[in-house]
Image 1 (tube, rainbow, N blue to C red):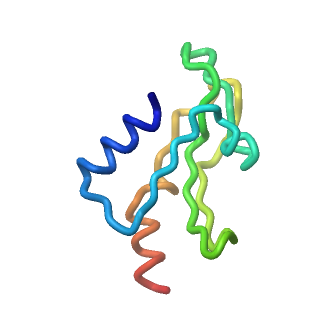
Image 2: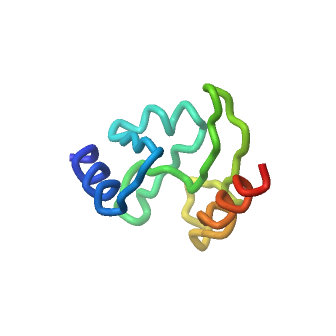
Length: 93
């Protein structure tokens, strides 16, 4: 169960002031335009890497990895969405 795993992870990280929300059906990810196919790896639909700051229901800041695609012709980039980028942004606000 996605919710159980996510909540257990959040508890193990002692997260405070952060609400984790699982997206088991992928609907939120689909509506955000970030649902991609990873069928070539046997995973089916997954979320492309992105992160955002949502403030009072509006997207304040958005990061996403370049090269979103369904073909698997990427090297699974992980630079833009590193937590340090978010923390740095929040420190400057």
